[in-house]
Image (cartoon, rainbow, N blue to C red):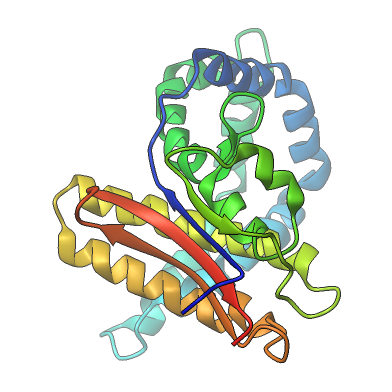
Length: 252
């Protein structure tokens, strides 16, 4: 098969720059008062707590309970009662975290800053424009959605041939791009976790599931009359021992 455009980018997990972690930490700490004011404005009293948090949480949570489970109805009622009566504990916790003479929110942010290092897995897919350029997920969808901006970020070990085209139906490309990036990134990150743990079967299941989702969403919006052959997928290259994202388009 001859393609008018084809791209393959290998997934590599970069080291997270210290300045990125520091910016996240400092920005969050500096937003403490705004976060607190937003919470209290949105949930000023017990009635609002029950409406905004308790009831909506219950409506979502109850669907996770198997209706065939013994005492399923009682389990759901227990959750509903406990959460509906939790306003005082919630309010005390919010006040302790964000207000008073020694709120603990800044210390907790600093203490948990190490967990932000996990963001490197996401950056491996989406990139960091000022530091690494656009990531492989952005480039893969870009070359088949008419996004010429990705050209300057395509470099070794990326594999690229042909010319950028827009394979999607009129008006779809700007909406398809963020959708594709989100699906690809989720798949790559989870597959990489499985790969690092030596769970090859689960890694391959994540790859297969991700490609099914891409096929049922992004690729459903292709203008097949102009581009009957379009590929957008993630995979694992055994020779390189790396995950990758691959996209291509053909007119026949």
